[in-house]
Length: 372
Ligand SMILES: Nc1ncnc2c1ncn2[C@@H]1O[C@H](COP(=O)(O)OP(=O)(O)OP(=O)(O)O)[C@@H](O)[C@H]1O
Ligand SMILES: [Mg+2]
Image (cartoon, rainbow, N blue to C red; front, side, top):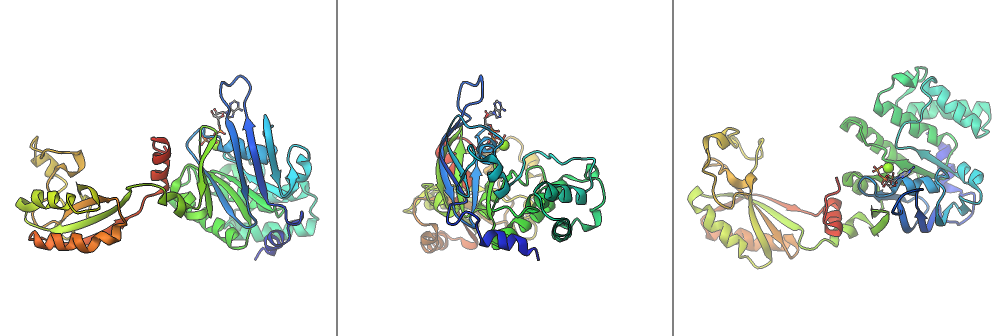
C-alpha cells in the first residue's frame, strides 16, 4: 500500500554504502566512571533487521543515540548510509528515522497533525504529505482516531503513531528503541506485525530490546550487549547453538508412583543425559483429572528429598510423571533409547517435547546473570 517505503528501500541514495556501520564506538558521559558504550563495532546490511539485545544500562539507547545524532560520541565512527553522523548530522537525519524509547509526541496535536507536521519539516509537498498520512493512519489502524489529540492515546496507540511518524519521510534506516516495552500482549503483537510488514518490504531496521523473544522473532542478527560491550553477535539460531548442554528433552511417563524414583535414576544414567529432573505440570498440563492445586497443602511438610520446590509434590497416581532430561548431545537422538528404557522399566511414554535454548540462555551463558 505505501509504495514510498518500497521505493526508499529499493533505491539507497548513497549507492552501495552500508545502511549502518559503527566502528570502535565509545561514549563516556561526563562525570561517569565507566564508558556507557565501550568500543562497539557492527554493521547492518540493506533490508536487514538487526537487534541490540541487552539488560538495563547495557548502552543500547546510547548507541542508537549516537547513530541518530542525539548523542555525541567520545570516539569512534558512526555512519548511516555512508554519511558520517558526526560530520553531517543534517544529511544523516534525512536518511534515518527514530522511534524513541519514551514518547516524545506533542500531546497538544492530533495524530494526523503529528504526521503532517513531521513531513512538512522534511519538506515533503502538501499533497504528498496528505496521501502518506492517510496511508499510514490506515496501515497502523488509527484512521478512526486520526483527529483526536494523542494526549488521549493508549500506550499502544502512541507507539503506533510514533512508528507511522517515523515512516512519513521514507527513511532508509529505521531505529526503534524498545518498540514494545510496556505494551500489553495484543498491542505488542500488532507492532510485531507492522514491523514484519516493513521487514518484508525490505526496510532496514535496528531495534533495541531486552526481550529475547522479540529479538528472536524479528531480527535476522542480534548483538548481545552488556555494560557497553558487544559480547556476541550472530543469527539467533547460531547464538543459541553456542550454549553447551542446554538441549533438553521432556518426557511424560505413565508409571506407578512407587517406580518413579528407580526410573528417574535409570534415566539419569542414559549416555548423553547430563541430569534428569522431575517437573511439575500445574494448571492443566496433564490429562483429565490434572494436578490437584491443593496437593501442596495436603502434603504438609512431607516433601520428598531433593525437593527443588517445583517437583517436590508428587502428583496423584494416573497423572503422567514429567521428567526433564538435560542432554549433552542432540536431544532428538535420545528419544529412542529413552523410550526403550521407559518401557523396560514398566512405564509408558505418553508425552514428549524437545526444548531448545533461548537467547536468555545465551545471555546467562555469557554473563552468568539473567537478562532481567
Ligand atoms: N545522559 C546521560 N548522562 C549520564 N549517564 C547516562 C546518560 N544516559 C545514559 N547514561 C548511563 O549510560 C549507561 C547506558 O545507558 P543506556 O540508556 O544507553 O542503556 P540501555 O541499554 O538503553 O538501558 P535501558 O534498557 O534501561 O534503556 C547507563 O549506565 C546509564 O546510566
Ligand atoms: Mg534504553
